[in-house]
Amino acid sequence: MENHIKSWADVAPHLVAVAAGRSPADMVIRGGKLVNVQTRELLDWQVAIAAGRFAYIGPDASHCIGPDTEVIEADGRYLIPGLCDGHMHIESGMLTPAEFAAAVIPHGTTTMFTDPHEIANVLGLRGVRMMHDEALMQPVNIFTQMPSCAPSAPGLETTGFEISADDVAQAMAWPGIIGLGEMMNFPGVVNGDPQMLAEMAATMRAGKTVGGHYASPDKGVAFSAYVAGGAADDHEGTAEADALARTRNGMRSMMRLGSAWYDVESQITAVTQKGLDPRNFILCTDDCHSGTLVNDGHMNRVVRHAIACGCDPLIALQMATINTATHFGLERELGSITPGRRADVILTSDLVTLPIEHVIARGKTVALNGKITVDCPHYDWPDDARQTVRMGKLLDHADFAVPAPKGANSVVAKVIGVVENQAPTEALTAELPVVDGVVEGQGDTYQIALVERHRATGKVVNGFVSGFGYRGRMAIASTVAHDSHHMIVVGTDRALMAKAANRLGEVGGGVTVWKDDAELALVALPIAGLMSDSPAAEVAASADAMVAAMAACGCTLNNAYMQHSLLALVVIPALRISDLGLVDVTKFEITDLFEENT
Image (cartoon, rainbow, N blue to C red):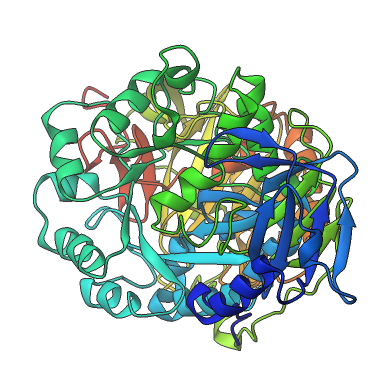
């Protein structure tokens, strides 16, 4: 059941009566400084709220106060709009929409634009509908972008389900759908793929926003062709030149700070140094795991970071409120403290450090001093959404053996090189020894395997990866493996890799870390092998234990689990692994594991 707020049109007569002093407000906030993101100024104004919306803002709201009006004394604090996340994946938090909302509401996030393409790859359109329906049950605004790419790159991976243009057209009529999720198949768009263009056209015909994802350094003709297809934003930029290219072509540049993506500092100079108009820049998180949400924050963390990078606090707030709302056609619905908009407001005592002291959503207090004060209702997830890890057989060490070419004493293998804090990987090579006909990892190069888990084929694809710093006998396995969400296993020991994989088959998905024949950590994610409906603090504690376990295996990277979970993401260069083999994403083709001269 939707956690409903009446439309502005429906309650306009009441808002008019409250603003005029003929009817009392539900809530009045006085004694604070209002941050007006429409004009980028601070005003010693008061706020009156009725029917979940702002009715009056101005110097004196005393005429709106009745005997039952709740009066909140701001005591000199700032009133800022509730924060908006312009692009994110709830599943990356390892939480269902309800528990994700419960985790971020105390951080001041009152609006999210979410793309559930993770669950789309596992459960198809039905899974998207479940996410959409639970999102609408929450006391804050969670808008859903219909996933565009499942699979993300047709022909390079096999997903549990596929999304069609008809699915997209159908979803555009759902009440919580705000647009199309990131169009990751940018080669398909550039080359005129009929399905990709049909999905974008169906979205535009519905008057909704097409999300972008252009993960290529080519800013020439190919980029122009991509923008011409209809993508309205892009969060894949990593440098100032990327932000310039997006905004000069009429796109919104979405700058992300997630658990492992640090792309704000390198792009915000387009505003802070080049002086570009900031209205076309939006802050987002993209991917935040539960540990980050519980320990560090959400959009408040991103805004603080933008300010620390030299951005004016009021501009940074615009990038996390009104700019986002405007982009999705919701400027007259949310994103500012102005009459008629949803009454989403935060009280904070400092605009730089941004402590989130009081959060109001739709006119009701939802969090105080870091503690949530409302319920976030749960969807009744069915059994088939909790039983999605189908491996077909128990695996053993032989499934993870990489046979060498006949007679070879060593090979030159292609190696996926992990880059700290960035989504792209490097295409490396390493000369590796052959022992008894099997290629062995050595040094900082160890094995990676993709275990098929949707159709019980028993298939295992093996390769090599480097950059995590693992040492000794270890293995880590995860059923969170963007975007196809098969199982990714990385390890230095084939027997442990098999144990880790089998463990996830046993518990229905999640993440497990093994060292010297013992399981050091387990994050159980029973819903689609992606999420838990346990409270965020519990999941975060398991995730923290997982991070510690990875460190105990020698890993020193920041948020290395995020890097692990992207090793099968076959739309971001340079090398990835899929159920079809090793993928060269610069050429969008399957490539041999060994160099030709091996």
